[in-house]
Length: 115
Image 1 (cartoon, helix red, strand yellow):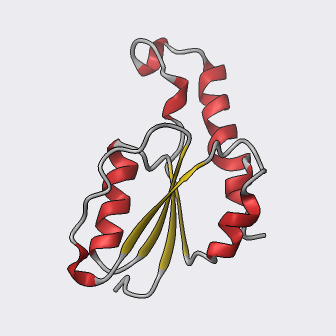
Image 2 (cartoon, helix red, strand yellow; image 1 turned 30 degrees about the vertical axis):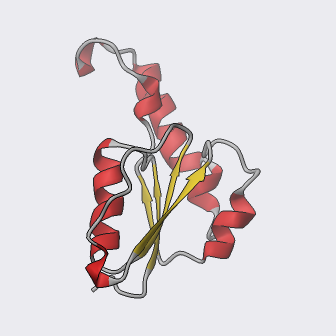
């Protein structure tokens, strides 16, 4: 289903983002893993012919946006947002933290690279 497709996964250095990237690649997709932190394991089941490529990029910056556009992705998984490091439970955090997370996920250059 993903063979021959290209995907960009932001926040792909670890956790959910890394799992998504490895799963896509294991199903044949060529995946550009984007994060501004050290990437975790890039191991995946290569039998389906997919690939993983790492790109060090803070999605709040537009400097490498042309490189992402040249990758010509079919899929964008905008998984970034953990950088906020909330303290305590969800209800104990200030509403401004939620606003900042939405700004990061919906208004950064990574969200606009196709348009």
